[in-house]
Length: 557
Image 1 (tube, one colour):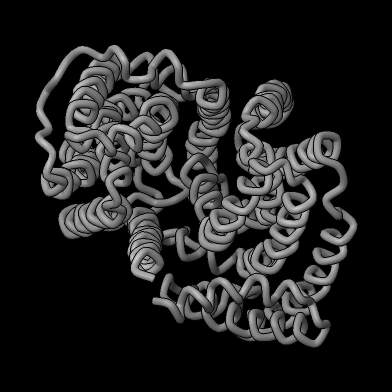
Image 2 (spheres, one colour):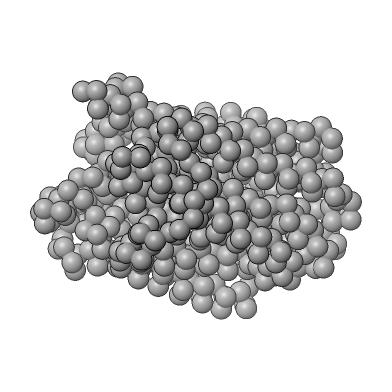
């Protein structure tokens, strides 16, 4: 019972940290749009420079450290020294590798910015390089955060790792607030490139890097409390670097290909920045309707939320059952768990997709800023949301089916699927870019993302059936059809409520960020009530599968 209580407490702390961090992340994104715009030049330039460290971090630290070395921490923690020797060597190695890599990448900021952008002018590249010199050092601190965080997790200290990003977001929000006090909000019609100052770069980019530094540093306190003597230590033989196994190798390769593809996609979308500047030059203000990297990444942030909150939580529980069944070679049970998971995910993901489509306008308005062109910027983000929302259920279903192979300790097939789609996707995207103007390519990329989710699901479904037999796909499809029917009715009700709030006539729902938030809350609540009542009337049993674990966790906590 004490073990169960401890597990429940740890889960509650981690879940709370994740939820608070995501809420603050949305606040940061909305405030940043107020400060520098959302479909504006500086917004895209800053997004490019601030996103590069995230992608490179995932490529290097997320793969090499988390997948290859960190599993050894569990074994090391059982040693008489509680893993102090291994941990000291790991942290020293991480600091050297991440530090050296960060120095090299930062020194290459200018050519890197040129490689990862399309049709940018010298002025844009100069500003982007200036931002990058401040943001690229984040790579080192991201890496240290990842390694120290995993050391804490291996020793049962879960809370700090999940709550550290909260400190980062608080600092980022404070920095943006200080920026607004000193430099004011974004004004449409202003030549941002000509009027931008080094002080603005230092505050905005340096402040965000400070947040990442604090995110890593706050973990040093909990690390010290582990009772291990951590000190610089060299010599890395016997750390498991040569014998990490095929799963780690395939996983690292998958992450490498996927993250390189992400950088290449972003390069194509960056062409919208130059297209917007050209549009504004001929018709001031018209460029606000052209979405770029900031708008596309914001739409991605919104559409991935239901998956992150609901699917990941449920999938984590079900994965243990999958792994146990696969370990016993009990494929019948594994297929039953697979079937149950896919049907359960239909409840939140179909509704989430419908809700985002209905609320695309107000959601876009929340992140459209507060300038004279905020409505046009919000509409551009809203259009991206509608396109990307269509792929949401396919993303989650594909994600879970991939876990079937991971449960069977088969990482090769997931690597082939994801890498194959990524490579073909890059080829397709670059081919399409030859014929499609930069001004609309963010919409094309949003459509390609949705298409990739559908293709990955189709391939994964076929391979799961081939290797393990039927998992009841017809029953799964029947659940999705029922939930889709309920979601359509809920969407019609939501659309009627939104229309009454001026959601389709640039009325109350579009007036300000606050009115957009109120509209989302009202319409979302109405849709949820209609949706779940209909599912109960239709006797969709998956509702109990979905609500049961969530309500049970609330009762335990």
